[in-house]
Image (cartoon, rainbow, N blue to C red; front, top):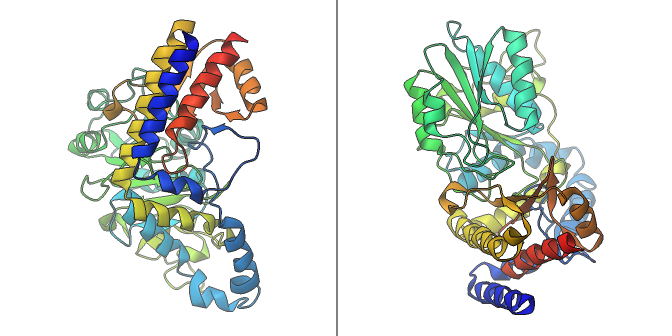
Length: 409
């Protein structure tokens, strides 16, 4: 019975791969010897096959040959140019509103502080109690610095934050609402346009954490009136470990909000070396120190692939992968007492599926030793992070079957 079920699931996966218009892109990613299924692309994306040569060429040529001249020739504009590319291919953002710099944490801090200094009569910062630790820790710190009151949302842990949850707490006291577009635990996909509208109806600013949605879920930041957003580039944008984050700031807020880390790169005249700080009035105002040029290289090839594929096709494959993971869960994991911790409806789910079982910490260790790489999340969850351009349907089913076998071991 088990063999026939496994065969049916794998045959279905092979058929989906054969029909997948993005299947050829799998060859663009570097092989990982000993890894049978990589299911952690929502934590760290795989490198592209040509990344080593591109990094070597950068050392030989842009840095090694052009030396400091490369700052004038290309590097000075790179944070803004790369931000524009991310905005165009992944965010639905027109040029001049997105910049690449710093870490996610630093950019969230900058925008939170800028937002909370915008209107002195507003005294509350709203954030979800189960949001990613960085977001919560920063909110606590910024509230302490500014004298703001924190309002904690406590939504259903699988369904995630809804517009009704937000509408119930925002008021004339709300300065900023900060939420994740895709929940890092359950993968729940928030209704960005409706929630943003509800926040604006209360006269507050809206900030979105896009770490688990940029590059896998289509969005229209401009059309939906989003005020500000931050996202990382090492997940679905495959920028490599510690690659810099990006920040979006709506054009009409530039030169109005003022970020707190006033480094020389955000000065109106960067080389004036003047006696006092005068901020730039465009997106460059979000920079602080010298940008990490080397760390901006790897993501550029992935942005090429996303643009060639289109974010709409990537989302379609993401839905196909996660639907198949849920189907395989129903067939082989639910009977073993494994819980589904993600929304079953693909319209309410981002790019990963989370499942839970008390034995999953030990199971994850066994899987890693066998070349099956999912992601464990405390206390007892495994996330199946299915990055559409680098993950096949067969790989997805292989991973789920391996979880079943490890549970039975």
